[in-house]
Length: 158
Ligand SMILES: Nc1ncnc2c1ncn2[C@@H]1O[C@H](COP(=O)(O)OP(=O)(O)OP(=O)(O)O)[C@@H](O)[C@H]1O
Ligand SMILES: [Mg+2]
Image (cartoon, rainbow, N blue to C red; front, side, top):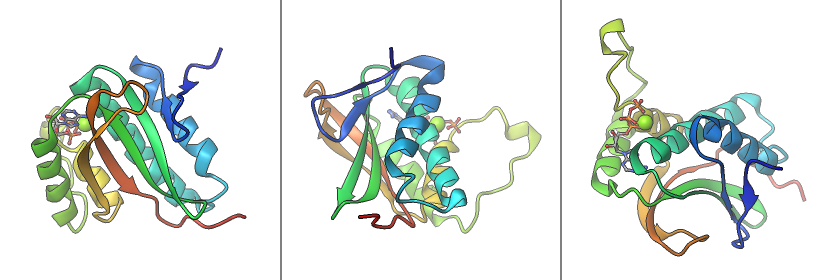
């Protein structure tokens, strides 16, 4: 049995819980965009970003969580992770902070146990093309938040 299932919503997929969720979500992402994103480094950056957001969804939100890939004219243009965890203001502040950095700051060994870096990495890797907004889960209809980032270097394969 697959560890995740397709939701009734065409573009939303629910993935498994816990330690394997980042791996499963990276797989889902790759399987849907690797035709369009042929640059390996760009694909790896997208995988890092989605891993950070899925980890946040499970650590800070709990509850159900979805991956959505938004398309424009057949080309994937953005990735969203949707959950019910709240935290809109905090997430906004962290993404803005990261987008203002010209490069990720070095991490010294003493700060390795401090969090608050994942969203900054998403903001930096996406070149600030990221955000958070309220929405509803496509699968359950519950109110939630979408944290999203743009897909760079995607091309039309049709
Ligand atoms: N999906 C979410 N739901 C609710 N709050 C969130 C969510 N994602 C992030 N947050 C809030 O934003 C903060 C910053 O998130 P960020 O990913 O930058 O750091 P972190 O998860 O605390 O640590 P790490 O550096 O290991 O990622 C979190 O500590 C949490 O308070
Ligand atoms: Mg985090």
